Length: 159
Image 1 (tube, rainbow, N blue to C red):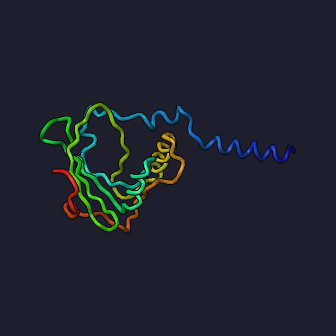
Image 2: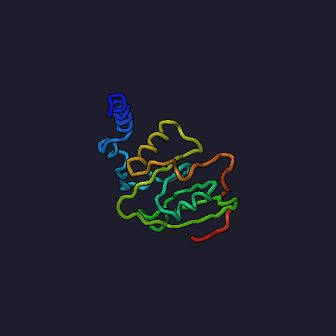
Image 3: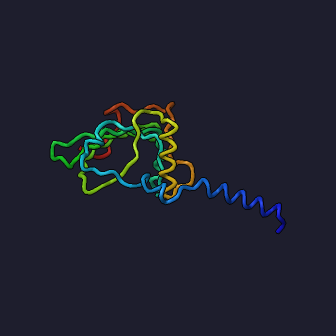
């Protein structure tokens, strides 16, 4: 192989390797947060962007136009939360409400508001990269779709 071609492969290799995060850079991005105090999850969250490696959920995300969730404490106990959500899927609002019992630690990425700062978007994409996702997100919220009002949707399951 001539020197000219070798130098192009070297430059391409350096470029590709410089964009991948190291395991040390990934560790703080994918370490689950402690749920010792579940109050950190209380409030409304709008689903802005997401990845999945499951084809069924990928199909659902392709049909989803918007989704929001409200997390509140349950009167039944300190380790139980109520998740109420409204989804706009193919133009139809669908609601769900479930009680969730916290057992150990779980980690989710959620965002308040309907837009992201570039730094938050970069953080999310770096987390996804560390978890093995190298493609564009399977879902990206489009503000022109709007959100369903609370109680607007057809109830599919829950209280």
